[in-house]
Length: 560
Image (tube, rainbow, N blue to C red):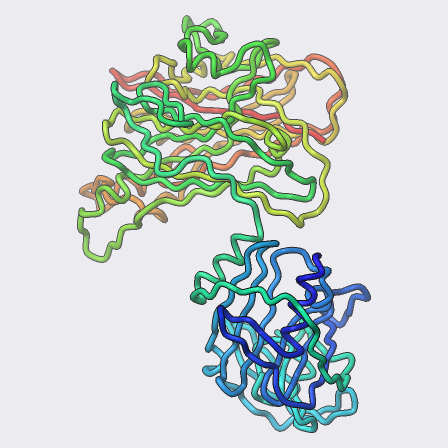
């Protein structure tokens, strides 16, 4: 870390502190430096970032060894307790350029139960105090045998000098060394911090801990002949599909990647199928060709039932869209919140969040096409905002090999792509693929949802999903959701029935209005090089009048 930062940190202890344009002196003597170690269940790790507390008669600085010596990584923060004002000054260093500060007065509201127990720590007689914070029992051991006060956290700063803090009986912060240290004021280049309110301060620290990649902001997905591409957002299928090219940074092996999407109705009152997808461009032909040139230009799949399904299976020259998130819009959230029911306070938006870490190799250091589809025939449609976040600090993991094998969700529905009704015969969906080199620890991420009609439609009838790999059954399950009523407050326009139920309450084939459908993770073991055949069969219901059933299934092969 730059030398200038070390000098600034030292200045916080030794004499001058910058809060906006205000200088605050660390005054009085004596000053003690207390070094604290931490442990859990009686174990104190040898290598750890020690907490350092500089305690004087009027102020207490709380920091850590790495922060104070300039070895910390961004973001980091420290705090200065002003005993006269009975408040805490907080300072955050978000990166090389951004420094913010705020004031927290929570110190004034702390209450403790003072107990009669005593014990000796580092040769000092300590008393015991107890409090409860967010359902956690905190025990503090403090001494009044030194002329200063302080603590390793904000708790107990005014009790005395806290030498031990115990949370829930097993998490311990304990003083290891007390040194009488007279501060000296070094020369330094004063740098201003930007004052802010406490909530904004905390939010800035939180957001600085990860990288955010914006995808879409308040983009309308609707059905309109006048819908056109604008800026870097491309629109297809009469506006029901939006696509954007995204430049992604390197995703480290120890990072996790998440997708967040927010949806609101912009006029459509109904629950709709939605998907966020990545368009692989590793083959001669891609789904982007179909978007630009028409769905009939995509390779067709047939299984003998007399119908043709475009762009749904992998071939030697084509990879289908890689599904990142399957989501379902609720009935009219936000736009129809004027519908009043006693005791119902409708939500303003639906937040969807999906862990994409298994698919990280498809993103890392690449330009990728990412799209969102919501099937609807409404001119107002829906409004979405989406972003990716990359979080460092997880365990190192070898990048996964990722391969989209099939995706029957008709993303180009409003441009003529057929519904997935290929499950109306015994063959169902058959996918052939080749493994060129052996794969270790292979899995199939299988996402499935049933759709169609009232009454006997597969949306409302449990159906067995069976998957075979080279003829061997690897998955045999009835995908079914019975918790849909939990999301009633997302669904203001949900129809109410005479039996006291609402449409959004009803159980469905692995989806609910206003939720994400997670993929099943199917273990395939180690796969040798060679030819493979996957077969997905579902006893699809028969058409009734103009109503029919369909199944949206997608499969992604991942392996070490």
